[in-house]
Amino acid sequence: MALPPGRSIDLPGRGQTFIREVAGPPDAPTLMLLHGWTATADLNWFTTFELLGQHFRIIAPDHRGHGQGIRLKGSFRLEDCADDVAAIADILGINTFIPVGYSMGGTIAQLIWQRHESRVRGLVLCSTAPQFTTSREERLGFLGLTGLAALSRLTPTQTRDWLTEQIYLQRKSEGVEPWAIAQMATHDWRHILEAGSAIGNFNSLDWLPGVDVPTSVVLTTQDTVVPLERQKRLIETIPGAQSFEVSAGHNAVYAQHETYLPVLLEACLSVHHRSVA
Image (tube, rainbow, N blue to C red; front, side, top):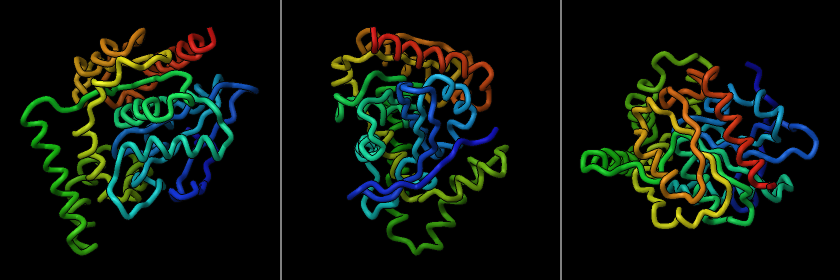
């Protein structure tokens, strides 16, 4: 599948990042496609650009530390990713938009509403949750990511590169196309590790009941990465949220895109129609 045009843009005071763009129909509303952990805009959304672009203007950025996203000296914060998206909208002259967040991108979408409410026309939350850890074992797993992130700051570059490649790139690359492996190799793996820790600490349950924009939740019912019951907490917590189900796993957006894409489009159109009603 051909990718739409992409370019690097400078965000004043923040850094340089990379976006894919689809112009969409004249006066079309804008979707901000927000990718998941260890992915890029291309890896997460390459199957969706053509279909969604028939109805919407599309902007798909690489998040901090991922792909060609912002490189930073400090630690990774999901809040900074949310602010980056608002800064991208400023540079492109986009007043309001619909964040479409997949997995980690769903946490960023939620934070965009919390931090930039006036910019958000609605939300589309896909294969994501308001909280990702509940058990002691899960918390220990994310603490492990925190420890690895700290280690990666202290060891020489070669050791850090070897460590992250062995632990993550090898695992993620099994069965993945060569172009996807090449994209993953461009990550800043220290910040990828820190992003995993940030996801483990994320919890929006206290403020999600205040969401007052049309929201669609795309549920992947066979998901073993983000269990269905956690995805459903979004529907239970956000007033008026509507659910759209896909009988597939966490990687359905590309692995089962023939089934997934019509549901994703329906969810996005639902938010748009409700936002102008």
